[in-house]
Length: 581
Ligand SMILES: Nc1ncnc2c1ncn2[C@@H]1O[C@H](COP(=O)(O)OP(=O)(O)OP(=O)(O)O)[C@@H](O)[C@H]1O
Image (cartoon, rainbow, N blue to C red; front, side, top):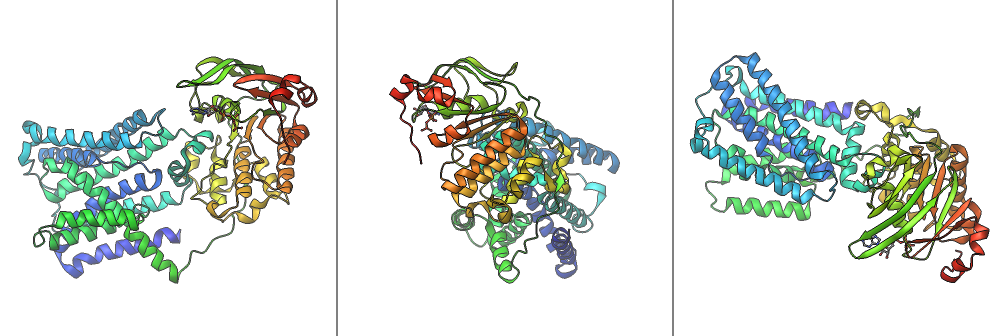
């Protein structure tokens, strides 16, 4: 808690000292920079965590500023003003969430389109604000209204801005310490992995965008009161771009970064804009330099310098607490492929695959390179949608849905190349895995969620040979390949899926690690009584673990039987020459 209270108290103290030290006019100017800084904090939160870049944040800022101007002009009283302000913030959140969800749903790679659509919207809004004279006052804008609560913009209103700045910063600092922060960061880090853990990433992006829109709208409302005039530029592209620059220059990965950026850029603009004719050019160059040389902005440079004197102290792991039950619904059901065809463009990958597994046991999938093994798993988890046919688990059809629905149907997946959250520590990776398919909305906002441990994860971490226990505070990017395989495996079984899909879990492992991994897989299957499907090239492993073996070749099922029968199958012998490590 001290790590939240200290910076926020310092911020409050510095902001309260400004009128005393520099007088009301400077406080008035700083107040304006803080308003832009608050909007930029929302951009920093969205862009810095999820990687989604909004180019039209002045849309929310400007609309809220106009609504504030209209309301304040009506002089309906403080209470009504505040009720309306709350209504506007809710409306902005709903609009922003819907917009982002529509753009991202089913299209993870829509980041550039999102940026362009937000840019287009803000350009339309500026155009409308400039022409709808009756509503907005046209190019001259709206003026002749008093500030919220009739406070003096050169006096008392500064303290309203300080309160808003401190409140938003406090909220952001608190969110940074809650499990929801990990989920937001995981979107930028490894979105496909997050989806396989059951998280609808389009909704996460939508929620974070909605939050940033609310912050921008709050800043817009303050702006109207502070400036006493709202013009079309308040809802324009130039302001939107400037807010992005403030977040980038100040530091989008730090709560206070955008505020620092806003005050420094605002102060420098006020000092040099009139005397230096190429000021905008200088700003553009500064932006390019920051993006290229210091992507973390001024805040990160300051933090790096500070950390030389006070290195981060890592705290030991917190006491573990039993996790709530997994929400997976299907148990002990056979997996059935019914005449499954899959083509991508002109490439025919699966050509009428049909088989039905037992309800439990370990099934190995083998076949030469390019046979369609990984693609078959991709169709089960929804990463690839069928051209025709049907895949069902028990009675439930499971093909051609979004990948985030797989875990909810009971299907956990480990990918071929270890897919984890590389910018995070081992323990942060495991925390996300523990939330997968268990956490209710409220759990993302409870620090105690970090302590969750499921039974399979606890026994895995307690296993003497599993390397992860000693590496909990290590950043994943420093782990050797084999340890990443164990981490991804641990993350997959943490959710206790009754159906476990493992794509070459032993790739890159030493012989000892391979033996350990096969033991772990066997133990998991025995303890859960579930179904494990493993893609494996090493025939000694296949022989050791498989109840049945599925042989794929050229997108077709060549054989599906016990290991011995498959080994003696002449067709398999003809096309498939397996090897051992
Ligand atoms: N997204 C895609 N677009 C086009 N072709 C694809 C795509 N995914 C897979 N393929 C092709 O489908 C075929 C089967 O690929 P897949 O990765 O499923 O094979 P595999 O049996 O898992 O092989 P390996 O053992 O090498 O991993 C290959 O020819 C591959 O190039």
